[in-house]
Image (cartoon, rainbow, N blue to C red):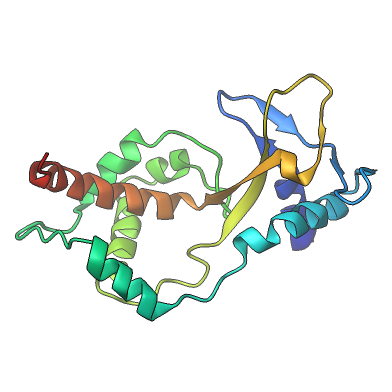
Length: 193
């Protein structure tokens, strides 16, 4: 049942401006035949994009060399971590976009008030302390946006005619927004042109 629910969510293609576009079929890359079965559509899309999203080995030594050559540490003394007020500001200005795996939109977090804000703040503090991220923190719902112009009735696409988008849970995006709000003034003040 969980797999079927996930399959249904993965079929939906979300577009900005409140419009929805539902992919009713995926054209198979090898022969152009259209499959309309939800599970088969997911396998076709997933198979096409698999190489792009498969975890790749990192050459740590090479990465360290690149960082040493090109990255400049930005140390901002005295900058505190995000506060509950910062988290609440992030919650206030977050627009209701498509939800992640848990289905909870920003409005749900806003409705939770300071209790919800404290949950997000606890997540930030956990990560800033160097603790292990909660299991599933980076899980996401994948949707496939059509590339190019959309025409009425044009609901069958080749996998390469789509652009995958990962929708993370709102609490992860809120934590990121709060950290961004906190560091933005300090970074702006330290940029030398």
